[in-house]
Amino acid sequence: MKLLEALPPDGKDRGLALSLDPQRIPAHIAIIMDGNGRWAKRRGLPRFAGHRAGVQMVRSVVEDCSRLGVHALTLYAFSAENWKRPRPEVDMLWRLLRFYLRHELEDLQRNNIRLQSSGRVEALPQRVYEELRAVERATARNTGMCLNLAINYSSRNELVDAVNALVDQARIEGRLDSLVVDEEMISKRLYTAGLPEPDLLIRTSGEMRISNFLLWQIAYAELYVTDTLWPDFNREELLRAILEFQRRERRFGGIAETVTEPADLTVAADFPDEETEEIAVSSQ
Ligand code: FPP
Image (cartoon, rainbow, N blue to C red):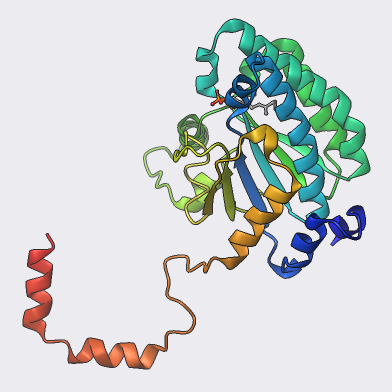
């Protein structure tokens, strides 16, 4: 694990990193970075200061995830609903994004990270859009972690876009009348096509909401909500989230591996039909 090489020999983070199972690092981590405003307010600072501190944490989490061997990291940078914020705050977020793109390109290249975006990015201010596309192009051949920035993102929009793409294609190919859509067809048209589905969804600042984020893709993700505000979500917090993920038992709708099938089947066979019917009626 490359992260260990970057850690001081006697620090707390090293102990945490050593207790991780390197074979079960989540392939895809998605993060709702929340709490910048509250972080600033608690310090008597303007909201902008919280977003600026948030960008510093983006840099560190991106590097750490890459060193841990995470394949994809999706960060919710700007939701389609964030346009409702006051204009100066929205403008500031675009300025910070441009700053990040400009200053991080070298670091992304050094760490072999590919940057891509998810969302209706064509609607971004022209200069932001162009710089985003330029960094995407410049890092397109990198083979390490994919940093997926969700910008002007809405999961419902994403699903609508995917379905419309399917309908358009079928219309062009003259087979609209017989179009039958399945899960794979939708997955392939999502912005995240080609990425593994998130194993771990982290939300900072304690809110128990999904906020229109990756609704399709997180079907089986483990959820981790921490009260820590995003600008305080440091390496220790990240390692703790992954450790908690590794403690969970993931069943994907199945049963725990330790349950033996024959015993269960015997019980089911002995179960009287009338009782089954009674339960069915009373649970309606
Ligand atoms: C939520 O905090 C955060 C955002 C809406 C923006 C997240 C943006 C960044 C971390 C900086 C830019 C990102 C990149 C990738 C360079 P909030 O303002 O809703 O906080 P609050 O709920 O405490 O008010």
